[in-house]
Image (cartoon, rainbow, N blue to C red; front, side, top):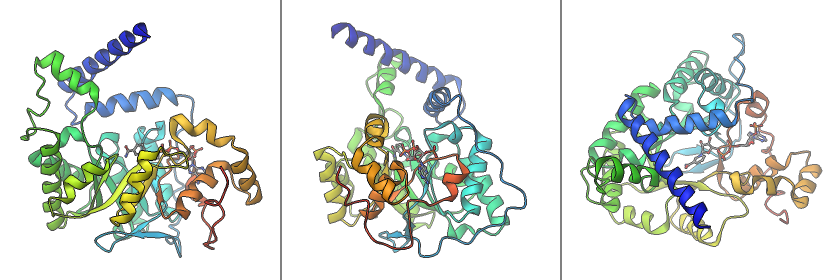
Length: 357
Ligand SMILES: NC(=O)c1ccc[n+]([C@@H]2O[C@H](COP(=O)([O-])OP(=O)(O)OC[C@H]3O[C@@H](n4cnc5c(N)ncnc54)[C@H](OP(=O)(O)O)[C@@H]3O)[C@@H](O)[C@H]2O)c1
């Protein structure tokens, strides 16, 4: 046990040093993103990249009668989006371009990304190409996130301006605070390499609460200027949302977090809080995430319901979330998955959420 703890400590320290070194050596705003990109690319080294879109593929109309979630601004967020993280095709820039172009030309309209995913420029290029081929920007619902390294008033303003420029758009539908605070390895870096435990030294705020509040203030002002339509959070706890609400600035419109049938009790409370406060929920890890995915895909009840409706277990789980009025954003580089909204159907009958798990 002790041995394992020391090993983990050394691993965290090495990771922190690597991140720190990248921060100094690399001119990009988010070297941490390079680490994610490298890890996910190595993990999926044998998976195919997204194939190019045929030049003569015409734009399909956006899906008729699509489920939507109404946000605080009155905007309608399409319930089914595409997630652009955590898989090789989300970091390989040509694949990012191809994936988004396939998605938009085949009627999809909700894109979920983040600055830390490092794919804004390629997404922007695909948006531009799709617009030329008949998919207007106004039909696309674009969601991105401010990474905690950019928290603080000024750095948030700069981050959002950079996002607008990289994505090539003049407004973003939803900007989320990606996580409530910095990741632990970065704190270790501050301690070891800068001899300081002051992780806020470049944020213009004294502690996590002040940093989050200053970020929300900046985002609310950007919303008033029309550069963002709705604001939201990701991976927050109830108290952290209450902190923002107490500012009486823009409302929290969306909360994105891990959501699937095996949520622990404290996360169920977050779900109840969102419902009570009219905060739309977007699910990630709908198939169970790293921890529960293997478990999920072999559950007999899910397999049986999938068989009955000619759907895969993954599709039953995606549908399960939709029936709870939650938006889903599965990632894929597979044009068939991009195209077939196979877990959605025109009829609104519930069949997945009543599955016995
Ligand atoms: N806010 C955060 O902190 C945070 C954290 C993690 C993720 N996210 C967001 O959430 C997104 C999704 O991540 P995730 O972890 O939930 O999922 P994921 O790792 O992207 O996996 C999605 C799974 O769904 C499958 N799939 C996709 N479309 C399908 C379809 N139409 N029918 C059946 N299966 C389908 C994919 O299979 P194939 O690959 O075979 O298509 C894949 O196995 C990310 O891309 C990111 O945008 C946010």
